[in-house]
Image 1: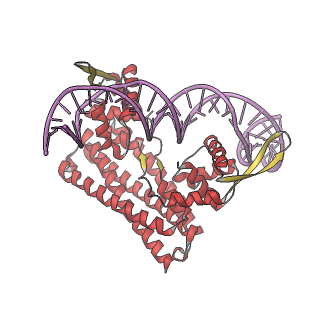
Image 2: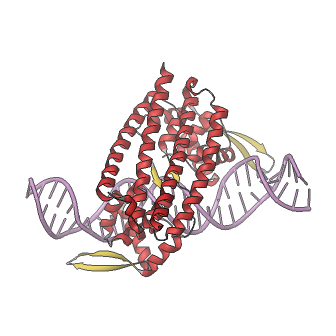
Image 3: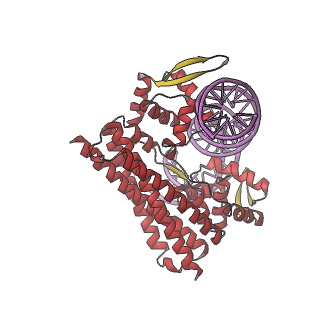
Length: 178
Length: 178
DNA sequence: TTCAGCATGTAATATGTTACATGATTAG
DNA sequence: CTAATCATGTAACATATTACATGCTGAA
């Protein structure tokens, strides 16, 4: 009961095909909810049965129809109902933290930490570019734009935090070596 | 291929029954990897077949044996092998961020944010207490103790970051109201 | 005697991943 | 003409959750 809602949010921003949604999940939404196209197609079919979405199918000689999914009033209603429920706390499953805690090989952990740090730096740069480009005047935002901006800010916080933690890990490991 | 490793880490610290592991997953390890007792029992059975763990079963008249799981050399080997692989980036699935991005009901999001902030504050306090109690001299730590400490530090960073983000969300929503 | 905690598990269901399958269109 | 991108899906498998089932022990 949650990928449905992520899809509803995506469709409330803009109608899309399954393929299109998959790409959007790879890009912005994927930063806090990942989904493959196979899963998206299955869930969309179920949501269609529920009446949360409608399709606008376009025939394509011989091939499967191209479908554009549109959120229905019932879908918007469901999104609203779900928004009003307290949200479950985030389940962060972190292989890396398991590894760190096990500490089976200090030098492997060290190089993994450096690799992760570089990933955080790259993602942060991408987020900051989006921030500058799309939200030059954050204090003037309202509604869905404000929500998207605050979600992006969450990503920025998360990446900065990740970098700081990596630095602390590296300092800790280097200190223990001497 | 990951809850196995979390269990191996737990068992490398200390042998335990399935029930015991479930409790440890509720407590410290559960902060970065959650698992129910049902899942743990199933996975332990598989790990036993793989030879990663051994059981030290105690008969209990009529009832199912009480089993204490012990990590084997093969299990330690597997843990080492896995540690040396680069770790997959964390999959953070955040209902809350989906909600925030959808922004279907500002006042519901506001109260949810306040609730989450309080959770972060409480968890942070618990972590900081552990830090003070168990790691009074962090610069002297080595090996698994250092790993556990750095994992805890990750939790502390995470909670502080969560609080800062909640504050930013609340400021943003309050600003948009005026 | 009742409730919490210890202790083990099965079964059904839901969710998510990986592999496979097909074919058009467009840019180099 | 070849590779990438658009576009849809099925099938098999793996993983995780929820409901159910059982029974002892010790404290209030």
